[in-house]
Length: 246
Image (cartoon, rainbow, N blue to C red; front, side, top):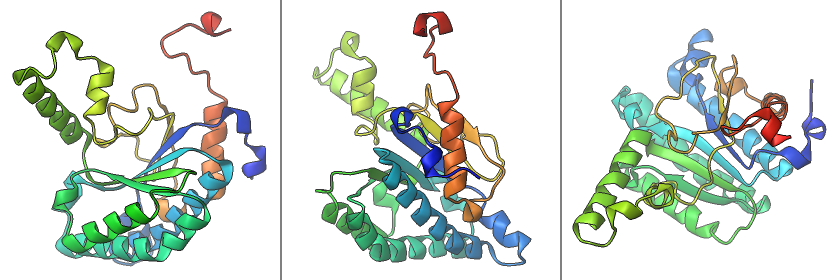
């Protein structure tokens, strides 16, 4: 089993994004309600954040709640929101201890007021931290993010603020929820599912994808290490040939 010491600190991914999948199935395997899986997934979040902080990975983005997740049973949604508030309150000291700045992306106005206020408070209190940036994707959908950006740019074109010929990738990126984040280097999805699920579609254009057959509540530091080691053993060409890189 590999440890953090096995990771090449000179070839770290700058931005790791994780689709935290499998909480419900993990609970079902144990004859429990789905919410039991979400409750146990909180510990995986804590360990993953602390492990990334130890490695000094600059950016970690966690897919916590999608726009589609609002369609789940009310009791599950309510539990997720309650867990989010509890975790934000409980983990503030840990964020400060590790010099972590918290951010969020998504349709914040659709979150319950209590959740939004707690989130805004923690974001504000950690805003001066200079270490890793942990971003929670909440009520987030990448197609919605891109659609909103297109609408904003179209309005600016209509009002002669932007010329169509000046619209480039940088302009588009500026109007995204995640405008403050660099492109994703490593995308991890747990639970054995091999799909992206409408997550950071613009930002993962050249990301290395890593799918692991482990439910999120069982995801631990050594799983993260294996994902990073896999990343470090790949050749990232960005459209070029191996000969050009060498």
